[in-house]
Length: 391
Figure 1 (cartoon, helix red, strand yellow):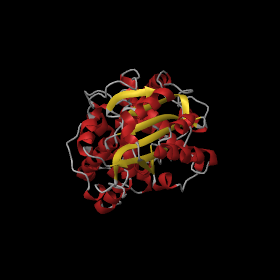
Figure 2 (cartoon, helix red, strand yellow):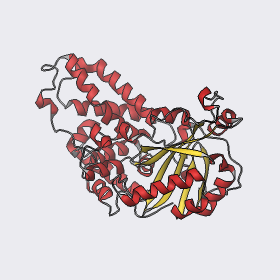
Figure 3 (cartoon, helix red, strand yellow):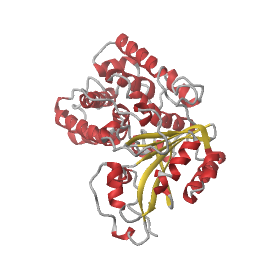
Figure 4 (cartoon, helix red, strand yellow):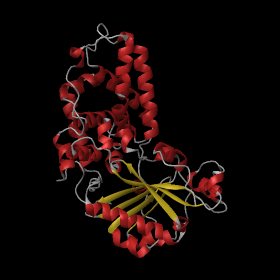
């Protein structure tokens, strides 16, 4: 599935910034305690307010560590609880930020202990044929899941566009699905070092302090992490460029082709090596012919759909809704492995109900990946997507 150089070593501005050590987000202050964060100088209420201020960036860190926005939320909540309980013991010998990241790293490391890494369908099996039987869904813990930009890009400006476009592109690169998948291949300590050093731009000395180790150990772990990623199948993709007329045109043509179910128009937008994935199903397709073959066969449930734009992992995304049909609730339960749940009453009279969250990979002006995440019961609320669309 490789489509160009690995993301951490390619020549694109965003990826070269990651590989060179330029931070993808603002680097941490070297010594917040010197600015008055010690408990002797701030009240407990003020410290609690400071803790809450780090929730956003900690969510991005934990998401990169764990590969799931839901696990990331849980990890940040656990971090805040542990920090709140230990505030009286915070002596200000390290920055408050470093202390919080140390707690978050321990929480994530505990969560990762003794379990299989999250992955994509392309990591588990070879491509399927369009006529293959649809397999049973695999558990949620199998998959790297998408996350809303607003939840995992550090600082409100990163998600709202109130930052320098170059910095915004670098931040988006650091949460690309392919890169988050590649991070899951690293041992937890190497993963933390790579994220802290090359994504967040922490100095080696502060990273060593956080991990209670030496600078030499941090540098060694970083070299091993870089080598692992260089050997991984990290696909290159174009950064999201909302102001780019060509990219906007590509996305508009995709929406038109999908909603009209014009497979000829859709084929014209796909790279020759494009892939279609559908977690929690492990089957996947490669190439326009097989993708279209699936869409006209098992995937014909996608006919008569409406797409609502969103943003996921620094990439264009869409909430896909299709027209409710008899047996809809049972079909949804079968492909997601969830319980049968009644449809919203408002959607039963010709309305549209959620079917998938689509995340697109764009490369060289064409679509390289169509990732349909089918667990809309959890993902649509997370992305702020409506529970149905009226007729």
